[in-house]
Amino acid sequence: QQSGVLNERYLELTEQLEQLEAEQSEIREQVEAAQARVEASRSEAAGYLVEAYIGAGAHEGMALGSADPNEAVNSQVMLEILRSDRNLAADEYAASKSDLQSRSAELESSEKELQSARERQEQVVAELESSVARQEELLASTNDELDAALEAERQRREAEAAARAEQAAR
Image (cartoon, rainbow, N blue to C red; front, side, top):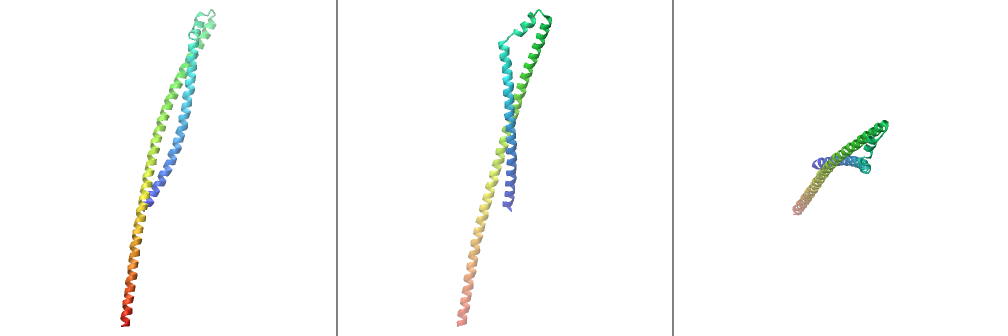
């Protein structure tokens, strides 16, 4: 009965391990996707930094030094769009980095939970093996006792039969 209970627990843990491994695989994929988003937003932000470094002040000079008012307004609008894009890229980078950290923490937690489940399963296997060993030991001991009792009964019957035969011979 104990072995049956342990075997059932082992099967439950095996199913739980399979589920945790599937979840961990999904989380790994999410971490990889988050890393890709971080790299993409980092590249985009780096591109804006390079652009800002190379053309530092060139756009603002165009807007201020332009003789044509339409050109000045258009330049100012372009500058606002670029600033907005840069801010958006920075926000995306921060969000994707935060998402990556969150998913990485989730993966680490999942790995700990999976390891804990594996340890519980190993413990159940050890208990099951110990239980089986005790049962085999008990069975062997019982079989030895039974063999000894059968042998004693056989000898008793033979002695009784020999005693009857001797008494009949007298």
